[in-house]
Length: 115
Image (cartoon, rainbow, N blue to C red; front, top):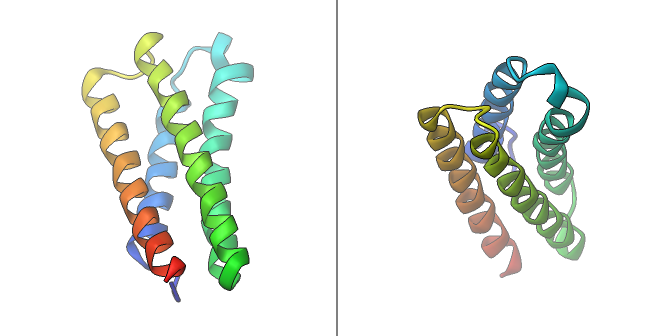
């Protein structure tokens, strides 16, 4: 993947901005625990794919696999937004679909890299 303007990078950035916009509205009692972890998961995933873009061969594959694990963590953390009623059902649906799309784009990149 040669450019940071490809769909995975653009959609990851857009989702992170969307998530930060919404986490600012979460109650203060979640700020130092849950909200911070959710925001960090978004940023770490974005960082992982940026780093992977700079690597080659086995190192890229390892970094993409790390990004996939972080995306799974993000997906798991996102489920709590419903449990704690931090996002509405439509907002959660948007977030879940976005993370699913990021996973498909990442999986495609990993598949091409494994060849």
